[in-house]
Image 1: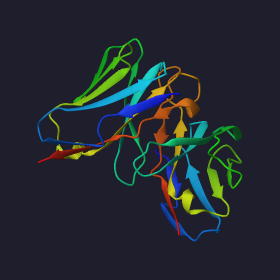
Image 2: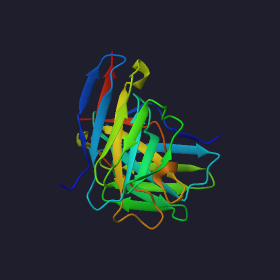
Image 3: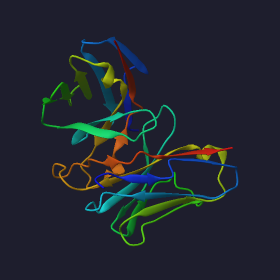
Length: 114
Length: 117
């Protein structure tokens, strides 16, 4: 069966460092991989997506990589700030024409310490 | 309004009562989704609408759950005879606009948190 795992339940890093979050999957061939940010008591907010044929995507301090051989995506936040503290969710998108098939990971809680 | 609006934000109810949540999506989005999220987990798909038509329902959506989108605009999710296991965050999301072709990027509301005592 399809499985998606995000690294460690919680990640604490010092302000200014680079945070790296991992999303691994099995038994799946997504066309896209999406990353969302979720603050406590709020809904997820879309950040970035990367296509299956892209190796890397950047947006400001965010960088996402996608390795379909390893079945893994890495999400990096450079020069991290306390305001980056949140839960980050990855989602596998099969390009089925409907978000019904989106599969979300359980998220990684990031805390950036001042 | 440029976002997805959900009401109420919080609902506490006793087991056996009925509850209804409302979602107002982004007006130009024709697809509307309901998800459920429990603590420490990612959102799980419940059902979705294309305009007013309910096109798919998850196995998670038991007979006690019903969703409507009568005029293809706002949607309601009703849970009848609530059980403690229904306690969760109920998220509404709409889809449309500037996604890359074929990608399913969602705009979520803030959610409605249900606590069943």
